[in-house]
Length: 68
Image (cartoon, rainbow, N blue to C red):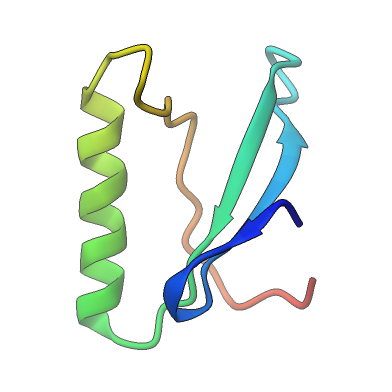
């Protein structure tokens, strides 16, 4: 783990398998439909932005909670 944020958000270091680039994996606990909607909206906005000071989104996975 390389960091933690508010409301249980965890950030891990990883590697993108296709490009071999170093990446950050952000795990966001979803406890309601509103939180799910907000998380998806955030990722969709980040996908559209292209700037050197803004993270690049490679993908989004919505699934069951995982024990880490």
